[in-house]
Picture (cartoon, rainbow, N blue to C red):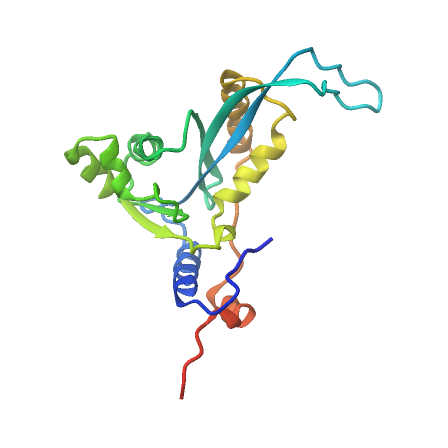
Length: 223
């Protein structure tokens, strides 16, 4: 479901149109468009082994369980190439974000790219400033210079295609995952299957569509 502001907002429409322009650029491996988002999952351990599925019956879990903390999952998705990378972390801090972005920049896939065109929401950690929380100034600047950042508007997370991948990932998880290592295994397996299938996403909604369907969000100009 789309979440949009209840009234006219120049800030919203600016960021929306900016992201829509990015999504309609032709594919360019030198400047790949990559969407980034993150979520978290409560780790739920069992006090007793779940009953296995039977004929016409799903696996059943005991109503008593143990909370084993939370695992965060960062997701990078390159929609026009059908590639994604998911990483399980202990948290969602500025340093966790910086480490994930550094891995993207220095990884084999984007090592020779001129820029990574990064689309993400306006979470306070989603800024090049976070790189300085983890890296030396020279390293932070090197990574920052490799990025072209575009933020989705506040109340506009539906514009981030990484959300599509996170939804697909969450649907693939078992009802309960008990520990971090199991989460890592599920995440790696899902990423491999999804990349092998080269599942892509092509954004259809355009700026022209927005100016018609979401026209109430555009400030009214006086004659």
